[in-house]
Figure (cartoon, each protein chain N blue to C red):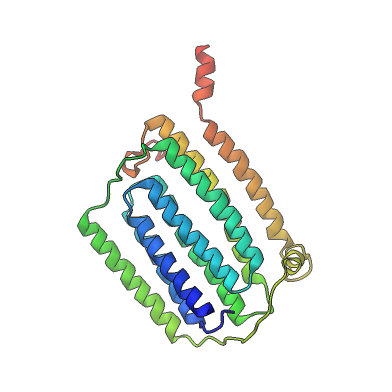
Length: 105
Length: 173
């Protein structure tokens, strides 16, 4: 654990990051920007897992495993999302959310 | 000392995150995200999970950022300014996020965490033994499922990214 830093301060930091991510997720109009906000949200939750593991249950390692799995799933998700975005751009020449209609039906 | 480093890291991360969701230039927003991700790796280093920090740096800072930068360069003109949401919508969203944040913080600060004082360091072999442990509490099944998921994501990304332009070209030829 970090000397002189309580668990409350780290959880405050991750909550702030999480809600900045949510703010970006709602206000942005571009698919890649939404992907960036999603990365912020996922990272904040991964840090939470690790910090709670370290401060409350230092003998266990479950939080570390979960954040490794979160990182792996995030990598897979980003690769797929980028593939979808590039394919979409080829077909409609735009990555704005309002133009994205062809995948709805 | 660690206290100062933590506060510097948190200021960098919060400023970077806000800049990342408000910047109107796509590439800059990705670079600000890179600062946030490196800051998170720094926090992993501070709480003595060196392996996780290394994974964070290689997978996020090395892999995902490069992938997103590539997609930005393929999709956008570099000087293009993004259109932003209406001012009123931004204000409402910021208000909702602040309310949610205050509820989170109220819950966190009113909870009494039973913190265990420790200076334990976790070695990479501990993590490896835990991941490959098939007894009770082991993580061998999710580990294998993740490997299948990554394989499926690779194949899916190739198939989706290839698109149907190639087959159309063959029809013309």
